[in-house]
Image 1 (cartoon, rainbow, N blue to C red):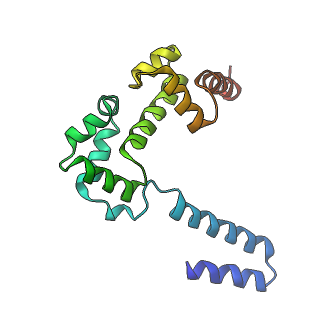
Image 2: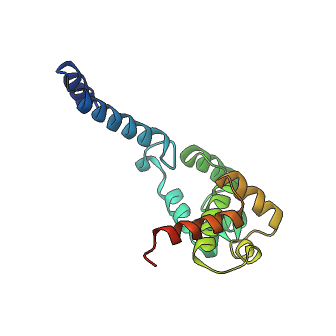
Length: 161
């Protein structure tokens, strides 16, 4: 980090403003990525092994579809301890984590399948279509139908046919 800052300063002092700007931009991007775009607050090595294993298991469709109860079944600790640890290391409640996994999968299904919106909702483990729409809109800033249309339009624009 200090070396990068030194390189930016040297390039700026020597009049190489384009290089200084490029180096500074890279430094900012790396800093933002390191501190804000990670899935959890602390370093990955700090996450307890049981929690990392549980998170990996919960990313599987057969588990996240079954929700919080399934997470508690797979967890080697109490529900309260699980909730505290998930918040500490991943900055999410168990429900937020599970919904995030369901929504990522729904986005995949919307872009890669011909399933109806209701079928996608059910396949992802949402019991309520209205709740699915609300979470989808909040997470992606658009409705599932618009996301599907935009995704298909984007694919058509980038394809060769």
